[in-house]
Length: 345
Image (cartoon, rainbow, N blue to C red; front, side):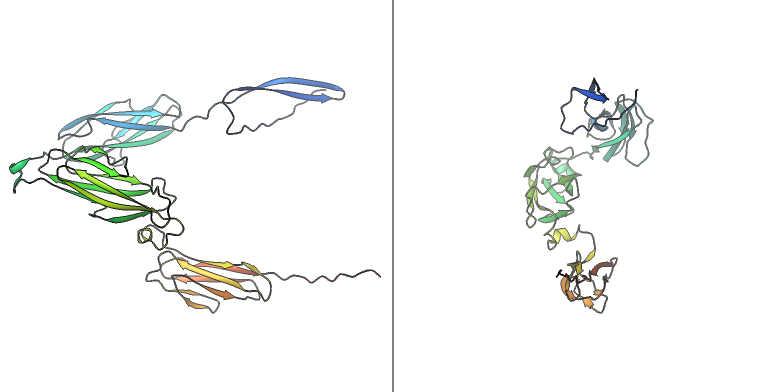
């Protein structure tokens, strides 16, 4: 007789990329059958991504730049769409790379490129070009011709503190802007070093965005960065960056990024008759809030607190606070049956 059987194999993620041979053995009564089978383990297809580089990346208007895009991962060949000003409307069909574009006026322009592979999968990448105004040097600029520079981060001369939530992949977002007069060039540096703030700046006056992570992993202090710009003269801004995880609720920088919400918990959540449960509550942004809990508990402090309850049946306790949705906790009551053991005579 003959028949079919199905064998399912699971390949561990750490398995080496190579060809494996294994034996399949079956029996039919007293007869034994065997056969060899091959299994090829290959690397998974890398996700589609792209990069884009303009050449030149800065200059005075009018500026013609050659923008090169490059795809990787996915399935080649690749095609590209260009949005020269990142206004959400692509200015080309899917074309090859590079492509030229001319910018006619001063400003910083963000370029977005969409790459498409042979499977019609798409991915985005972007860059920017900067067209600063003509720079004058010395007395021709007016005034006394003295050189000057002003560096700001998030509109501040510092020091300032910035927080971000743990689920943020990039960390804290910093808007860096600088204005210089009567200088020929400027360079950027940071301590500790920052990838997006280093080396000769593309313009005398402009802005950029840097993403910073808290590498200190201390929920109370974070890490301090010193951003500097040197145009002869120099300027500096001190920024403290903190990851706003558990334990940072009292940090003012974290108050800006925490979601506005309140919570209530019950511990234990299941009791027996006569046993108490402790309600605890709090709000991430307690300032100006008024809170209360039902079941005759009444007004409570939005900054947090606790209250013991002893329900005789399953009871839900709802915390109501201004400007945020209600939240609740339930205490269940378990009635244990008494068991009497009857011993034999």
